[in-house]
Image (cartoon, rainbow, N blue to C red; front, side, top):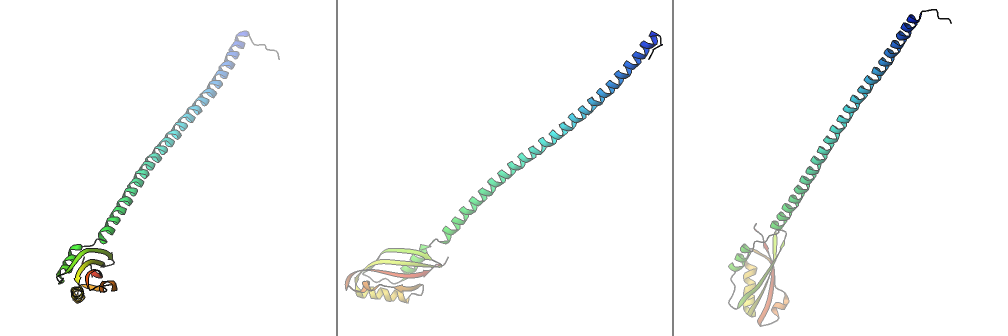
Amino acid sequence: MINLLPSEQKKELLLKKTNRLVVVLGIIFLTFLVCFILILFSLKFYLLIDIFAQKEQIISKEDLSSLDKTKDEIKSYNTKISNLKDFYSNQIYYGEMIEAILKINIPKGVEIIYISSEKSGSNIKTTIYGFSDLRENLILFKNNIENDSIIKNPYFPPESWTKISNINFYLTFEYENQK
């Protein structure tokens, strides 16, 4: 193709062509720049949301760990209270029992040396170890115990009756715990 245009117009056309090319390239570059900025903003918001979610998870884990600590402390206190309750429910009130034993008429010549007790339900199983100078005093003591309404199931073993004097004896009975 033969170009018959003067050189000025050729330059002008080349300039217009170059301007259009610059404008098109500028629009493409601006479009790319806008898209890149939009991608960066969306990435920024995504990261902010992710960071916020992680902070919330950390806070909830801390809350759960403090809640677990509190639950463990409560379980510990409940165990201690339960142990105290068991301890006090198995407590033997010796004052009332000894008072009941001392109300029994103990004959002269009979001595109580040792008292042992063990709780069994609402009753207290008690063993009394003692000394009697004569069998008659021990029989009198046995009769006084058997006639007492507070003492239940008194038992003197047969070994307590084999000697006539200087008798080491023991007696077992049940006493109902009043508390």
